[in-house]
Image (cartoon, rainbow, N blue to C red; front, top):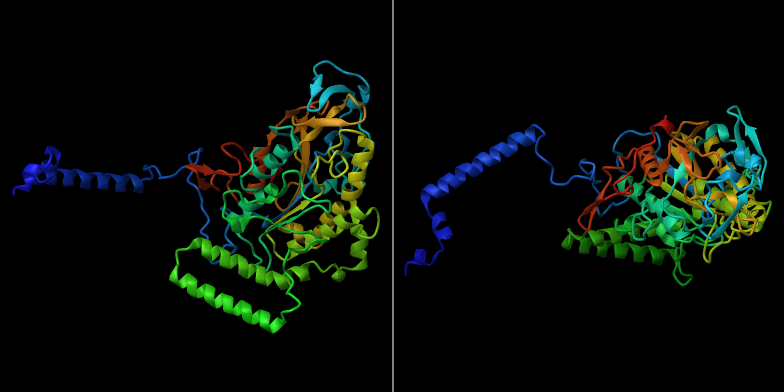
Length: 500
């Protein structure tokens, strides 16, 4: 039977010698042209970011997902401490001095909104605390935070921040993950995904929750999103160590060690049979880290090793019980940084049921009382933490970020005692490695209502933080659902003026 007769015309053409040679010649020419274009840098890469850059993906060994990795470029900062204050700290009552508020106190100038997030707006209110010039720079800050005020010469304030939402859950998400929706990796996860950690005895990323509980967005603030689970934050604090670290009382040390050794041999044998199973390797690495944490975590949490002078400076034995617990968290944060943990996120405030100025900084009523209560908890321990890290040389290689999700309005709510949410202007500050000290970047308008000079988006802010860690925010990506995802979405520019 002649099988050629059963072929289509296209099939018969493939059996034609002249056609085959002609096609082969064109194919060879095409390959040669592609090689020349690639050599000259004119051939497009397979994957590009929105900005046209090639992604930089960290080379991660599934068996050692936390191994120390090189940054994209040299940087001074090797570690980062994020001090996050849920609830929205009032910038006009702390660090953003606005003389016009004193002149217009009790009045309602034109151009300001009549209704804001929680309802009708009241009149302009001057700061509830006196502002004074501080340090050699003469930076004016309020009496609400006197301990932090003594260090203004070491801080870089960003006064022109704005955000895309005026709701707390979305605001926390946006500040900490770059997106208002849930399910995206946090800043700490991106950093540890890119850099790993120098410490192999402790987690690469630790979230120290407030003594009162989680913030409104909960674990999303330090979650891994679609990044590998190894890069989510491990949350514990000075009062509540990680669960299940202690050996059961019915198991002695020798039997425990033999059990761990047996499991390790079984895991290694299984991994040899399935060497491409990255999930299995990641789980094994997590279990092995948990085993090492049985000794490393109790040691790092043992505050009895601190001197009485250190405990006094942090305020561990004075003030409210919440302040004392937060002070212990601050010492824990310093100890984790000392042990080489890459990212530490320290929370001051929780939000399990709305806050209302009691569990966090969300002062919709009686701001004079509620902000003062939060400041009593936060100010001395935080200032002591930063000063202690500087004294010990930790700020030579550690970036410190003090942040909140948005600001508060320069006018009162209709109740006459609280300030509503202000997404249009707020203040955060940086200090430590790579940051210009004693400076202020950007300005809000005369009322502190909107960012006016050198406005900074949350995308810009996060791009700058990654840059300080030696990471290009446009090239640090993860391919997910057909997109090159990144912390700054498709936006963001580095604020060069705050960098050394």
